[in-house]
Image (cartoon, rainbow, N blue to C red):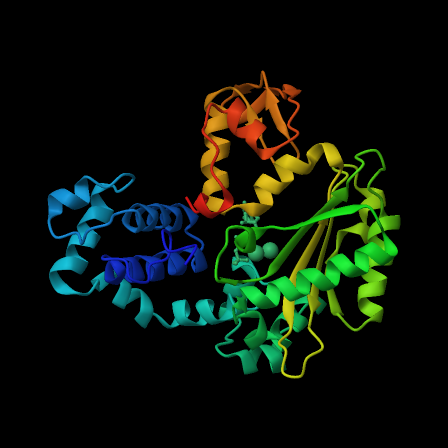
Length: 344
Ligand code: DCP
Ligand code: MG
Ligand code: MN
């Protein structure tokens, strides 16, 4: 299995990882990003550990694991449990927030509000909450959106989008990124990045609109969630256009799937590819590394000669020429890592 190096299944520390993963998820749901990330890092360190951890010294030797987290891992090893996790799970706000977090389009502010308004179940949301159109769709397809997409299904979805693009917008270069490109056996959604092969033509609504229209016409796209191309005339922040939608294969029994279509200018291709391939943890550490080198990395490009005062940029620097992902790694003095090695 391609992702065996990063999968917890069959990992000698699987039991520990499972508990830490649950902690990380619950911290995210309760809007404690810092702690959630700390647990993520410990999970990645444990995944790369090939022997079962048995002593406190071995825990302390793990990278990224600080005292309080080391104590928790030690507690799991000694007692097979974690008091903090059980306490978390028995809080009724946490279980409601965890349930509500599965509604696509609902952030932590929204889920907190719903809880404060007395809602506890999806039925409460359906009948009593004031929902945005996006949240209504997120709720309607709650089960589908929270069901992982087998890799083969993503491949079939990719084929449909590529074939349709060939008809209405020939010359597009299309790459499915995210967990799919990292060779995961299943994906949460489909992330497809597009640009023009020749690199000359400008990205514009006139390309995205006919493709989306055609995909709708053939019954593949079922709903639009957010379509930034609709509002892009008022926003000059970027030439990138993002479309969030819901798609479904025509075979009976197919589930509704979340699909992201992202159009980028050709000169942003490599940095976008890098960004949308992730993982988000990997992106975070790449950006941190760039900062240490007085550079700045985003989905739009890699800039050098950046001057910062604290977190504020005094000089945004100059864009480097980044024709490939490899070139970005080189500028950062890193050896290249293929997508399947980018989970941390
Ligand atoms: N991304 C990021 N930071 C975020 C969200 C996304 O860096 N806050 C980047 C990295 C992700 C990529 O975008 O890998 C795609 O986002 P997804 O949420 O679709 O994540 P994945 O495709 O990695 O996982 P999943 O299988 O859950 O879709
Ligand atoms: Mg994804
Ligand atoms: Mn996505």
